[in-house]
Every structure is written in structure tokens, then in C-alpha cells.
Image (tube, rainbow, N blue to C red):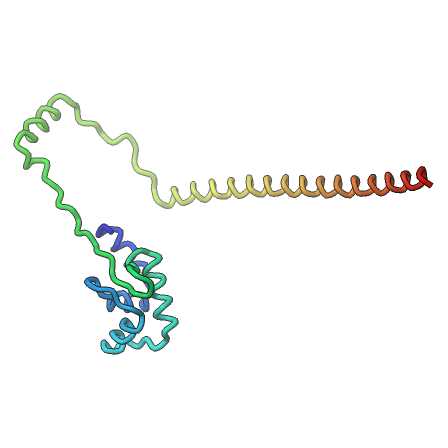
Length: 171
């Protein structure tokens, strides 16, 4: 797991899940009872085994903890961010950059980025349009279902008439 994904997931953890995550080891795998013991050793008030199991399950689901064998858990290794090479540190990069600057005119930004509030408003309009379309489709499905039920009732009534006529002719 990379560093940015880890930080994003970690920010969304509950306080209890964070406490459980802090005691889960990275070098070896522990079972739930060992994790509970470590919580008690660190004076972290987690007395309910089901809460700890739930926290571990959520940590496994989000990918912060893995279960190498059934019932034992360990932290997932987080890769540090890769060092970005400076463009200017390459020997011929400056010459390339200078030649590109001289050959290409500087471009001004075309349009100002959309305001987040306007963007939310536009997205809301799109969702409402989709909602209206979905309601229309649901109504069409309901109409088709009603028509199918009526057709089935008519077929049952026709079958009943046919059986009555057959019984009249056979007697």
C-alpha cells in the first residue's frame, strides 16, 4: 500500500479502530487474544471482544491489516513515497527545457477552474435529472408489470372458458 492511500484510509478510521490498529504488530501476526492483551497492557479501555473483532474486521476490509492465516492479523507494509527526481538534475534536461521554452510560446490558462460550489450545483442538477429518468423508467416497468398481470388474468379466464366448453362438448 502506498503512503497516500494509507493516510487517506487512516483519516477515516474511528477512534476505536485507530486504537486497535496501533497495537497490531507489523513484524509478526497476532490473534485476537494477543491484541486484547496488548490493549490492556497499554491501558486502552477496550473490554468487549466483539468490538475488537469488529475493528479488526473493518481494518482487514479497508486493507490496513491482513490476515496471513485464519485468526491471526498483522499490519500491511506501507511503502514510503518515491523520491521524485528533479528534472533539472538530468544532464541534458536543462538544454531540452530551454530549447522548448524558446520554441513554444507561453500559453495563458484558457478558463478559470470551476468554482466548487458551482460544480456541486451542476452535479446536483445532473443527479436530479438522473433521478427523474430513473423514476420514469420505474413507472414504465410498473406499467409493463401491470399489463403482464392483466394478460395473465385474461389468459387464465380464457383457459377457464375453454375447459368449460370442452366439458360441454365431451358430455
